[in-house]
Image 1 (cartoon, rainbow, N blue to C red):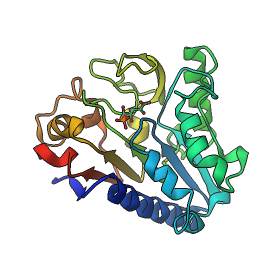
Image 2: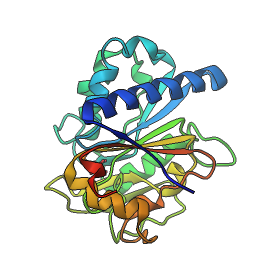
Image 3: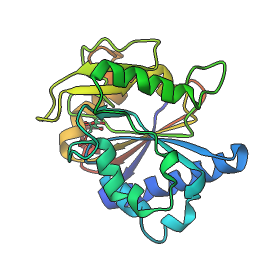
Length: 243
Ligand code: 6PG
């Protein structure tokens, strides 16, 4: 099937489109199921989306008290560390909106790595959609790296697992190497997955992930194929350069 790739002039336009889809996913979920389960991503790309969602005219369109947030992956640093994906979203968005603290389900990244992964599996289980042992996220945000990774599913990493979370180690751009990540079966159970891809540095890996041969060991982003949900790629012109 042809991938749903939407190309925008720049990161601003991309982030505004992402905000509109975020609002739509949350509204549909709250109407149908009384709450929205959203899985955030780390990295730099979603910062502008977070910033938009914290401000008018977007913020008033989100039913924050009924939203629950999770993370697709986390770096094993304390929550207050500037490299923490939780902290990034907290500072740019979560601390600025009326989201109840109990609706923020972060990875306990201050724990020993393997314990944090197990604890996060239990967190996912607490909102599971039986017979699954994890939720069907209403929206998952993901990014890709220049090497084709997504979340903390890195090239060559043994994350073909059937377990919902994994502790992994990978060096990328000097970022903290120890990570906890959600695994493909959980992402692939989502109702909607949104990749945000910006910048020239991503153009080659994006082209390979989308149109290259299927090599999930090398290009883990290819593992993301929702079984009964939408997969949408929001790409800026710079990142679309090799498509
Ligand atoms: C992380 C991520 C990671 C990220 C990509 C893209 O913790 O670093 O979750 O998978 O999304 O590396 O990062 P950028 O948006 O910074 O390019």
